[in-house]
Amino acid sequence: MDRPISLPTGLTSSSPRAPERHLVARDVTEALAALRAAQPLCYVPADKRPAVEVLADVLARHGIGRSDVDDADTRLRRWASAFIRLFPELEATAGLIESPLLDMTGRNVAPGLAIGDPAFIKADHALPVAGSVKARGGVYEVIKHAEWVATSAGLLRSGDTPDLLLTPACRALFADRAVAVGSTGNLGLGIGIMASALGFKSVVHMSHDAKRWKKELLRSRGVTVIEHRGDYAAAVAAGRAEAAATAGSYFVDDENSLQLFLGYSTAALRLRDQLDAGCVEVSAERPLRVYLPCGVGGAPAGITFGLKLLYGDAVECYFAEPVASPCFLLRMLTGGVRCSVYDVGLDNRTEADGLAVAEASELAVALTGPLIDGFYTVKDATLLRQVHRLHDEGIDIEPSAAAAFLGLGINASRGSAATEIFWTTGGSFVPAAEMQSYIARGASLAESP
Ligand SMILES: *Cc1c(COP(=O)(O)O)cnc(C)c1O
Image 1 (cartoon, rainbow, N blue to C red):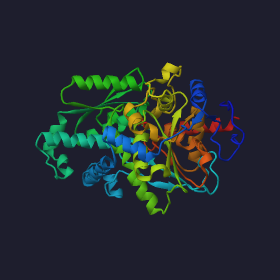
Image 2 (cartoon, helix red, strand yellow; image 1 turned 30 degrees about the horizontal axis):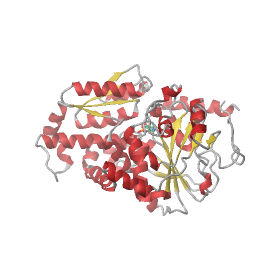
Image 3 (cartoon, rainbow, N blue to C red; image 1 turned 120 degrees about the vertical axis):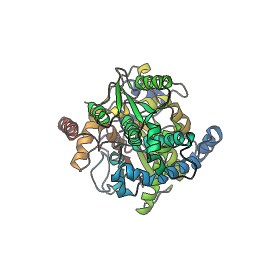
Image 4 (tube, protein in one colour; image 1 turned 180 degrees about the horizontal axis):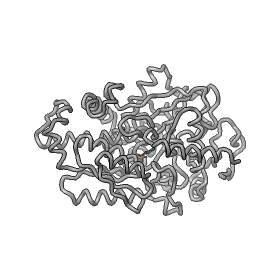
């Protein structure tokens, strides 16, 4: 079982504020040692610069800022009626692809959560269309591409409604073109479902860890699934090479996509509306603490970028990774040097297939790295126990998403009048039998000491 390697006094695993069995790394050396040993750890970077300064730098250097997030949100909202025609279930949200914010205050949803601590689940496991956070970035990149294809062909002019893209003329145009992606599973679902709904050919390159049901679901939607023996990076590389060699093929590059990033970032605007509607104060005295499962880093980075634009340092964003695949934390610890988890002897094998990534996105690092408030890693057994615990609370999520609940107390030093937000990144598309097996495994682990 995962045992603590050392816990500072006052932060033992029985303390109500402590993360479950984490080493609290005090510096880079200690963090790297625990990371290499696949020990659960948490790490809070020292000397963080104020968010406004970092964001001003990103705007100056990369030209990305608030107006890009607003533009992405506006584009998604313009698509509302087209979305409803493609996915009738979106009628319920007036064409917005959005998830509820669930008030969990007083519920026993996370280890270390005290009764009365304000706590919410941002329920992206229930996002329509793709059943995961990929319904934000993936859908956005595909619609942007579709507009570009139609505009280039003279079938769409600026100001036209996106409903035009559903006409037979546009579908015929899209039918000659492909949208391709490399994925451990969920991005493939997001891209594949959206691209095929618009009439594109779509090709998903899957890594060895992609679950069988994700491949079957995609094939049932007419998506071509190509299985690779390698990992996520190998699937992305194969997809990138094939798309480059195929005329009319567009590759969604998860390791380097600004459009995915911007699609994810719009979540911040939506969350703000939900917090406002619930009269949840966000201020230096009452910060938001947001816990985000991290794979290549695009989704948590995009969300963090959006949230920091809105709230500055009144929001704290924490990235969660499996002990076998802590690529983003590793990249931050190596201080500017690209590095894969294989380089430090880790195997990148995890039940959290959505997070099974060996090397972080350089785009996510460049746009968001210095904004992130902390990192923590978790063992698969802890993830499965958390899946079981949430099932008992009536919420079913996949193991990747369970990572959100396991970082409480990472920054207890900052005071406790915070609102906790656990971002559940995937799960509602998991078939019942598969979910039952996660829950049963989590239950048997919960019984062992
Ligand atoms: C993709 C994914 C993430 C993380 O997104 P990245 O952009 O890869 O960091 C987290 N959870 C789930 C369930 C996912 O599918």
